[in-house]
Length: 134
Image (tube, rainbow, N blue to C red; front, side, top):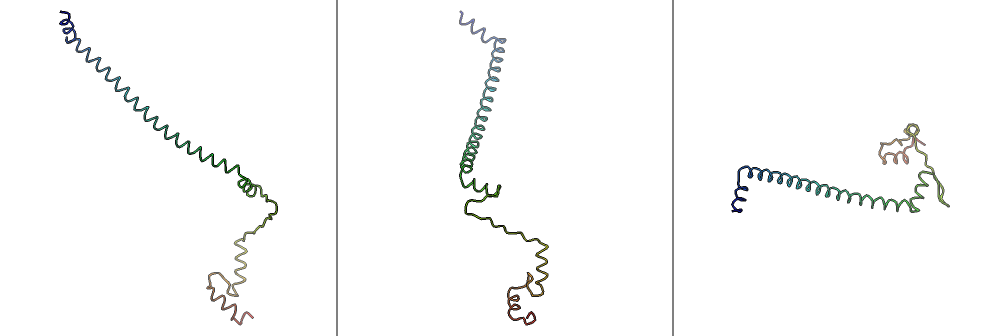
């Protein structure tokens, strides 16, 4: 008899509505947990890729630090930024040609045919065989 009473209670209309409500609540919470788990897994994957990038950057910076600690780098920086030289070296300064001074020289030499733009053959011909310049 107790078995039939339990069946009657479980399969009664109000109890079926309660059971369906419980299933809906459990389903929503399971779905919510699944979505949260998926979001956490995506975040873990994103963080692992970021870790890989940062490790590569760390390796690059380590190599740069090794290079900065070498004597070659120190000498290069001393030459470029401090204008220093090593023992036995001498500094050679090559002056830059101004545009105005190059125009002056070109206008003076244009009479002799040494203006840029003329063919080399013509310049050499005038140099050796032009009797007017003598």
